[in-house]
Length: 408
Image (tube, rainbow, N blue to C red; front, side, top):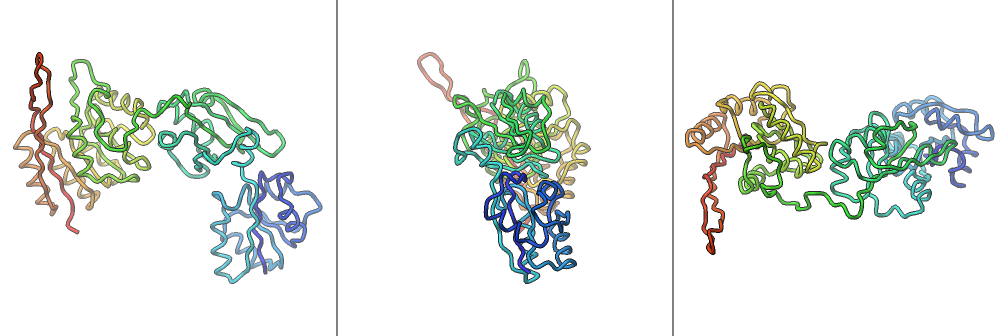
């Protein structure tokens, strides 16, 4: 048995390559999604089996024992295709396999728009969750395969929530098929529309618009954050945030907690660093929660920053286990918070911010009791302030950062 995996392009016969067409005509059996099989005319083999999942395809091939079967895939077999899951199973069976690539939806959209696609960042939201805001922060132009729960309108809705409502976009519906259509507009406009199930999305930031936060290092200037009137909601200062992010060793795909998040300055820093991860900002004051959301929108991180309104440690019980945690405020419940973190995530990296010696002692005592390797760092920051023609160094409140981690 020799199995040929055929990329069908749009799935409509008009986008078949000549090589693919010849393979289909010579086949004695066709397998694939019902839509692909139904679109083929009577000149192609009539022995057809509807199947999508790799193991189901292998079971059909074992049962039917064709000599020259073709397995059909929409688009290109090398771009987020089920072909990647089938090939290892065919090799395990000892069957020969040949792959015939097809025309991808990227190529079709590029051709329809009359522009090259080599500068587009390619992403898939087809049957898998993705964070469109994080991608658009990093890339000027992003192409999305869509489907399942994340269609073009849903993706545009997420981008709108993240503050990208003015980004320009185009949706390609039924490309290469009857009813083909291109819909252009801003992300905010397209979020309100309904699109065909066979659609793709291209989003582009205007050339004169760049993400608010360009630096890849932590330490956003304090003045860039939205604050409450009278600055009644506390905010972790720039130097402390920069040091804490370094001590927590945040990775791009981390799941993070910011406990006692205040204005959300630490939450935003975390979300910018963990661009493929998730940040939960835990805060009990409604005014502070509103500020966190506002700052999340301002810095374009609403997609991976979620506000959990409630008091720790109770509010933490319903959260997924973290990779790292910053505790900026504990409401007098620090030992309970630290014990809960260790119960849910024995290897989570922890950083506690403290200004009182009693809090330092409590953090040291609790983390040591939990078996952590504990370190304490004191930050004594002074900032220059102009006084007439002179500049004097004005001391800020000393801050202690207590870090805990399990023994390797």
